[in-house]
Image (cartoon, rainbow over all chains, first blue to last red; front, side, top):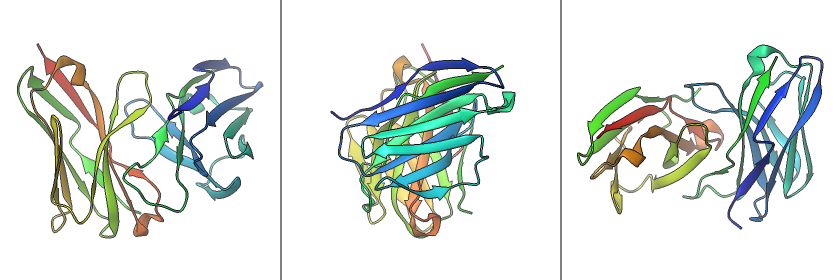
Length: 115
Length: 112
């Protein structure tokens, strides 16, 4: 299995809702990432998990809460979002501790719309 | 922080070659990557080059690296309409704490 799977593919939520984005990989990668991508912009790093521990938080607002229950799963819990949080949320994984030619493997993303 | 820049748009005719350029600032970059993103999709790794290489060829793709000028290019030979997408260069190095840093992306349009 050489894929990163993200669910759901599309999500519409109200500003008072609580929802979660899910990401799964079975490549044995020990580093997992959340990126946010606005239209016509490059992906921006949000969080990095290394060996199931949060290693980087790029000053992301607390309405985004990541969780890594095990080495294969990564969640992003959403609460009280704003319309400007609407974006494509990408999950990625990589072999931890190694800078390799394989870079990161990305999922196909969750298109989030906050209404 | 580290900076990676690309031109925003490129239009070519089907069958021609496309050249997408990228400049970066991290002198400690170890690997440089090219990703492709089709509309509504995630990012697909196309190819990469290690910083001690000048050139890498992979079928229709040729990557050239000028480390002195911190300039990277991606040449696509015999460009097809299916190559229409956004292409991101990305770098990873010590100065960026080994995080993957993306350029702004180049939108490639292939005309029939």
